[in-house]
Image 1 (cartoon, rainbow, N blue to C red):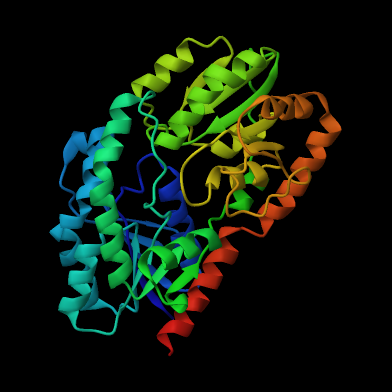
Image 2 (cartoon, rainbow, N blue to C red; image 1 turned 135 degrees about the horizontal axis):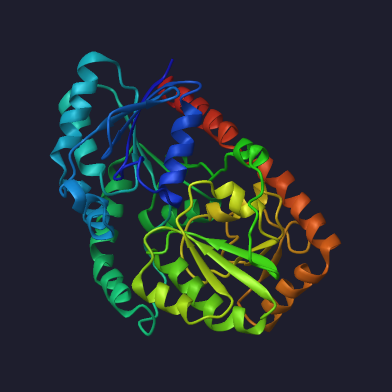
Amino acid sequence: MLNIVLIAPWDFMQKTGGDRNRALGLANAMSKMANVVVVHQGPNVKVERTRFFHYDPLSRGRKRESLAGNIVNYYTSSIANSIGKLVQNIASTEEIDILQVEQPFPFCPALNARDSLNKAIVLSLDNHNVYFPFPRLKLGRNFIYSVYSVLNLPYIKSMERLAVMKSDIVLCVSNRDAGLLRQLYDLEPDKVCVVSNGVDVESFEKAYPKTYKGFKSRIVFFHGTLSWYPNMEAVDIISDYIAPKIPDATFLICGSNPALTVLKKISKSENVKYLGYVDQLPEYIKGSDLCIAPLTSGGGTKLKLLEYAAAGKPIIATRKAAEGLPFVDEYNALLYDKVDSRFIDGVKRIMYDEKLGMQIGQNAREMAQKYDWNRIGRRLVEFYEGYVGK
């Protein structure tokens, strides 16, 4: 049986977001076919077949649970010596075939640990999205976050380049990202492996729809980590443009770590409500009438669309939001080039045509079943077994 150590720059026991959901979905799925150990900033626990081991981040204690603490620990995991020490301790008691590093930032300590062990361990980078080139940010909105992101780009680019060039395998979420990586870093085709994002289909099948009390209008749902710029921008678009044009709908937004600008924006809207971070996300999605993804920036593929699809909900999205996923306009989603009057008309079509909404939602659910984490994890383990066996 293959032995995989997955290294992540987060605490998986904290509130989850897209990056963590991908890593956790892969870890849980691979653990059904392989021995999987997760090195993370959280506690030593065992969840089903997956073992989690703690390493010390730079910021400890209560600060680690704050947004600032999470950001610090995320970007400074590149100098967390405790990662390498923990990997060496694991290697002293059990075999390691694969070191899978989530995102470029904890790559350096993983590389140093692998080299110090002097063993034939495969180093795999799970590059959730291509960080460079990065869309130019709009400094007019969420100004502080925008400036912070722009200043961070040189560091992000240098870490991605180092991790991509030094790894044995680079995992990415779509053919588009694979092409970008090959073009940016002149990679051999067989170094890049597409491992799509997925969804826990079973959790949506078992979930009971949330009953929303006090809302007489149709429920339109959006969620995401609200400290991530593309999601912050989407909330701005919902609050400033979409919601005012559809006053007979209630727009519900869920997500962790909301920036103050996001909360202020929502508070000024009559028909946009923030529900906070919710643990039972499938119930909230299934309780809504339709889901939207008015994203205009960001890389990778969006797990939120797969979650909406798994819940069987009709989706109205930009083509940017659906990038890398096989959504077909007018079949399993309504897709638009940008958020304009046509996007608004699409939301209204689904709101008032229940039969159309049900059909698009059913088609989306059938597509989501092909993206179940168990299928994706099985394919990745089989790929690793073939690579190790070369």
